[in-house]
Image (cartoon, rainbow, N blue to C red; front, side, top):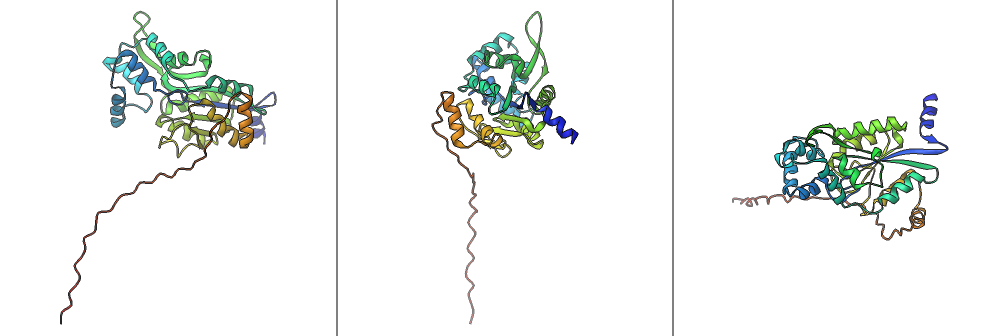
Length: 287
């Protein structure tokens, strides 16, 4: 009983229920992979082919490919902090990220959400891309050590790929004093599998924002949109238990009209044609 009371106190501040909403960055809050944008900046084609090759050999955890290339690939050894900052400026973000953070911070009917970004992308890229939207101390991402004289990247302090995201999320949970069942995680790809399973196992809530076949079966909900506000829909429906009309009214109060909302259940089927069976000759009866 006392343990339950302690957990309840953890999740409430000034009468508000407190939640942690953590989001991936690449292709979750953005349309592009940071590695692709950096490669275009450097004039280095073939980034996706390199990533595919590492995936086949399982050389690094999914999501950590860019960090590996920056440290070990001769074509990326020229990368300096200024390249990462410029890459962030060129990232195309999804719409209304700033409005999303405002709504979460202000709270909704006694529920308040602390918004953090957890990503395998370089820290400088995300801080540059989300400057003025998300505070730097709310971004947990891959962090490099630089040579003070040359600016060359020497090593990695931390990487937010694979199980690394689980470690970062647990650090945040401990720091914010929020129970596991008050954690919401949003992601789009294979590098989010570990953290989504971790959140689900502890009764948290997970949202997929892509049709990636590895995470859609794992996530509690899947929502697809070019607008970052889309993640509010499953939060409002499943956590706050709002109906469609209430959700539409919230968006309208913020000057956003929810134009199309299609709830679709998709069954993906693959059939394999069996080879034709040989036709046996009819038996001939003798006299």
